[in-house]
Image (cartoon, rainbow, N blue to C red):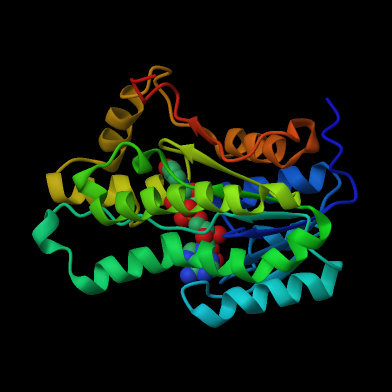
Length: 257
Ligand SMILES: NC(=O)c1ccc[n+]([C@@H]2O[C@H](COP(=O)([O-])OP(=O)(O)OC[C@H]3O[C@@H](n4cnc5c(N)ncnc54)[C@H](OP(=O)(O)O)[C@@H]3O)[C@@H](O)[C@H]2O)c1
């Protein structure tokens, strides 16, 4: 299927590793001119024909800066992929999560997307573009182990649903994807979920990850490329009447209909 994305422009956040890097690769393969952003853009992104922009989206000013850079470099934004995010497990329970922890999580997992979207909206409206945001299955499967992350991702889901209603009539589609465990550094890297939870429980990270995999019907983590293909599909006008949706990609982890 031709996704008819050739010649479009995209801004991808959190593009240096994991899901964001996979989304960037997929969009490049589809002929999209991609502005790829992260704090460190000197790694794998160097090998891709993209416009790389180094920004820290934990700071309010960098959301506007990355959008300005994107518009300057590729002329405007047809596709905004809000992917940046981080999850820090809280093995010490709710009482161990400080105000600063809560605010840091809400800042990166909700406000970075709010701010980037606010800055990109004029260009998206002008070009009748589309927004795809990476939320999480924890938005609808709240987990005390990631209590602040679950709340921030639930708010993210709510925000983009509201926004879809405001801008839909003006030609901008707004959708989210909600992955379960994905094989990236967030889960499997040093200091990732498996490492942190394993350290707290006296278990090997591999054992923690294996247990998480068996919670899914498919018995495995989702690959970042599988999330990327879904993001590209949602960005395509092939699904031009699809807006305000959340698509769960979790190997059947979610048990309800
Ligand atoms: N992996 C999972 O199991 C899973 C499941 C559900 C949802 N998600 C969501 O999917 C998204 C991507 O996750 P991932 O697993 O791909 O994570 P990851 O492998 O840890 O990659 C995170 C990306 O975000 C960038 N980043 C982090 N902090 C940043 C900041 N302050 N400013 C700018 N860029 C920043 C990182 O690059 P730099 O370090 O170079 O800045 C990196 O490119 C997140 O929103 C996450 O919540 C992941």
